[in-house]
Every structure is written in C-alpha cells, then in structure tokens.
Image 1 (cartoon, helix red, strand yellow):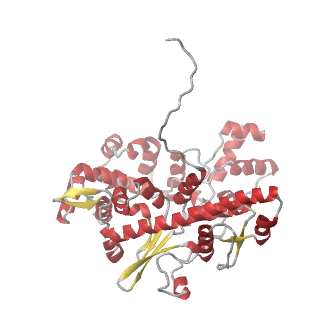
Image 2: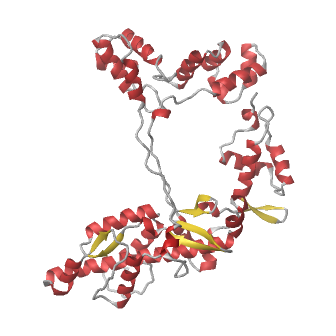
Image 3: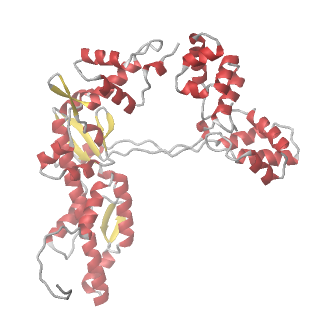
Length: 455
C-alpha cells in the first residue's frame, strides 16, 4: 500500500485536566499555611480582589446567582460543622494558641570570637584565628583543609596548626575538629575519660559503631565490662558540639482541623481563622459594568478566575470536612480514649464510604494536622494498615507504640531481644512474628538488643 494523506473523523474518549480542575486539585492538597500564601498571591494578581482586616462584608455582584453564593460564603468564613448551634464567642474559644517566634541566639562563630579576645595574639595571628573561626560550620567542624587555610591567609602550616590547637581549646570542647574521631578525642581529653576510651576512639571507632565489643576487649586485653563502661562514657560525648548554638529552621505546625467535644458528641471545625479575608475591589468592580470594552474583557476574565478560586476553596472545605468526619466515625475510640486506640484503616475505607477516589482522600489529608483533645497529630497517623493477630486486626500504629514502650521500660543492662518482645506483646494480645517486630523496630530507629546494652 502506498503512503498517502486522508481526512478521517474519529471519536475517542479521554480525560482532559482543565486549568480550573488543576487549580482545584492543587488547592485541595495545600495545608492552611500554603493556602493562605496562595490566596495572597492570587489577590495580588487579580485587581478585582483585595485583602481586608474585616471578617464580614456585604458582597453583591452582577455575575450569576451561583457565583454570588460562593462569594457571600467566602466573605462570611463561618466554621463548617457548627452551623448556628454555638455563638461567635464560643467559636473563638476553639481557636488554637500558637507559640511565638524564638529570639535569635548566639552563633557558634560569635561564641568562639568572643573567647578570642582573651588570647594574647599579634595582628597576623588574630587574622588567622578569625579566618579559621569563619571556616567552622554550624555543627562545630572545620570546613576548610589546612593547606587551603595556609594559602588563603599566607601562613605556614606550622602557624595554622598552632592557631587551630588554640581554638580547639575553646568552649565547647570538641569544636574546630576536622572529623568525628578528632572531635570525640578532644572531648575525651577535656573530660579526662582515661586511656581506654581514648584508645577506642583512636583505633576502634568503627568496631564500636558495629557493636564488636568482644573484638575490642580481645585486642586491648581487657574485660568486656570495661569496654562497655568505656562505650557508655563515649556515648555521652557530643558528636556535634556546635549544634547547640545553631538556629536551624524552626517549623510551627498550624492545624487545619480542630476536633472538639461538645457534650457527648464531637464537632469538626476547619481552622479558617488563619486564612486572609478577601472582598471585591469596588473601583474595579464598577469598571466591570461601565468600563471600556477592552477593560471589561480583561476584568471579565479576572472575575471568572476569582469565581473558580472561591469555588476551589469551598470544594476544599467540603472535602476535608467530609473526610475528617468519616475519620472521626471510624476512629471514635481514639478521640475518646487516646492515641493508644487507633483502629486499622486505609485510604480505600474512607474513599468507599464517601464514594470518592482514594487519591482525593490522600490529597485531602496530605501535610495537614488535626488538633484533638489529646494534642496535635498528623492526619496521616490515622491511616494505619491492620496486622492479623489472633483472628482480629490490630493497627500497626498501636503495635509500634507498644514496642516503643517496652524498649523504654527495659533493663539497660539486659535489654529485651526481638523474641522476648514477641512474648511480651503476646501477653498484651498482640500475636505477631519476630520478623515483624524486627521490621517495626528498625522503622522506629531502635537498635538491636546487643547495641542497646548499658551498664
């Protein structure tokens, strides 16, 4: 058959994500802080919208009746789920209190520079010392090599080594070390730990990390008890001596949902107090009806974008509220008795009950937190698959909490092995395999029993 050109009419079905649908999906996945920033960003782009400090406004528009309902609802910002059953004053009592921002503290470099003034150094040595201090990272380690410092400052290796030793004598012990071994060695010398801990740090640090205590005892010709005692003293050293001065990135969790108990029932409240209040800009709104053709065309497009933004926010509120109410019904024991009573539950359980897709449930809880009578928890925490135990399902979350509690209360001189933890869990009605205990223990970051042993 010869190749050729032709016109054919073909009918197919395919899913197309419109810009409005993409925006709705994106808004649903945002937490309350991200949504607040997104709303402020959209307000800056859209001349028809403006941010106001007032929480209630009379809003009227010449667009369709449905659009007017969305806008009126958005400007009202009343809490979904309470309706008219409680007053505005009672609603304010449900507003969570957040911690203020921490004050800026002294950095490790500032702390070392303040001690530098007590040293009797000449001008060149002082400049070299300041350069070395400037090369120390937030954890207290030297970030530049000795040759690099010598070339950058025009100093000899002997001069750099001498000033480095001076700085290493500053507080906190272990600062300005070039590696972990030197950091621990400086601290061990400062605290006077003795010869055996120093020898272990210098020659057997890898064996210590792998819990090869018998090998260390054989090589050093000491008892295993002496090695364990030296290990305990080494573990009390700080591998990051400068971290206490580091500011780091402080993250404050703002719950998207508040679950409060009213009488014998619970109520779900969306935390909309964090969101900015938006209203129509009266000037540009007037141009929408009496402006020139070009201005009216532009403002009509912006009005349509504003409408879909409000609609996306409303859909987000409805979806999150429905999902949380479904979680509340399934996890009622948690809200009544506490975190030790999480029931097995998956995304599909909620999706089937609400007749929505599991991906929608996943987006509705992604990155969001709920304020409960027992504290603030991630919404993801409620979704824990079940493990078969004695003919019934037990939540993985409850099993992990039980393992954590057993390890925290064990005898440090004789910690529980995985087999012994299995037996202890069986007494609590949790019949699970040893490999399951080992898997959950690793997920919790708990070391094996031979590495948890203390004197």
